[in-house]
Image 1 (cartoon, one colour):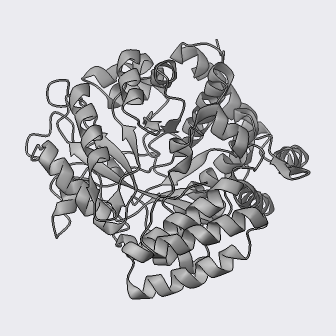
Image 2: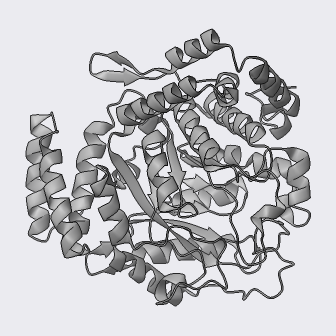
Image 3: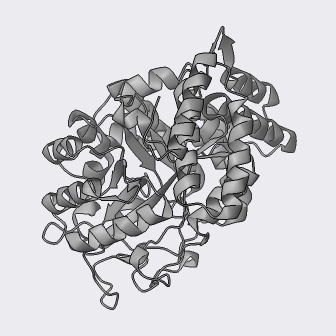
Length: 479
């Protein structure tokens, strides 16, 4: 029986509730009056200097997803853009994945790291190799990483992950520093989550892959990941372990997208109900080609238009969450999604173990094919030309603005008083230390224009001083 307050996976992601939701959505997909009411409910409301959004339930959002009316779709896109602007402004946070090891004991049939793949080279970075990878990333200009590793208690125990985190934080190369490490590793124990929290991680990220239990068990035939409940309940254990920023995600293409979408929002509702704070981020990867993985073998793929619609409605339904789209997607797709709700993108990603220290992008150990293969400088310049602020900011993590403290600021729109100046400060650092001449010229003009938009005069005064001090060699200012 469905119960969002339950700690049991099959109760807060109840199959019957998902099916009931999809049936109700199908029946009401042409109920334009109801749909307009839903859209109106989701619209940002101003209270003095504060902006609030109510978001949507999984049922309401599923009705929007089922609707095929072109005029409604235009309204959905316009509202998603309005909400994105209200809470995230022009900022786009940039990060990079760092693959530590592709040793894995699971049999996931959509991932080339599965145990049965005997011809893929297996590799695990030593601490010296981690250091070399981090320096390569710092020399691009990255400040925020998401570390990735296969599940293997012998080769990739929690102690190895903790050692890697400590190594990453210890490296200060020229003006470079990784200021925040997010972690994407397999579901683990409360005790291990406490260890990750003590190591100073940012967000703990774990993709559900699919919420459909029967499909989940078929897609994960062997290994510890086969346990649906243990995997699905991981975020509750992470929060019990003190990690208050968690990131959800499904791998679109494995199961019917409407089912996944409803269940994903049910998971977000569960976290809000039980822990008082929803997901810090939601990722929306689509299955892509990899070593021995053919996406066409899965018959639930979604086209670009459906993908855009999912992103837009996710932004409307969970207005305060960060939405992530990676280099799995092409420049063209990412460009469209930026307007519709995406607030974080990866840049210059290598999805192979040890890939950043190699001149040519290695493909033999890639977890998935990278569609957007531009350099970080090119990604930054692209964002600037589109009118976005490329942000390398990690201030909220380091100032303790996480979990409900972050959400309380975000839900009123007050977070922009911190985020806009912090984004400009980290952009200035990138332009000064790493940018090409062309990108630096565009970026400096962009910062001048953005300074004029800062309404708080005291903030503008401090920000202007900080930007000047960066030119004099100082770093790491934050609001």
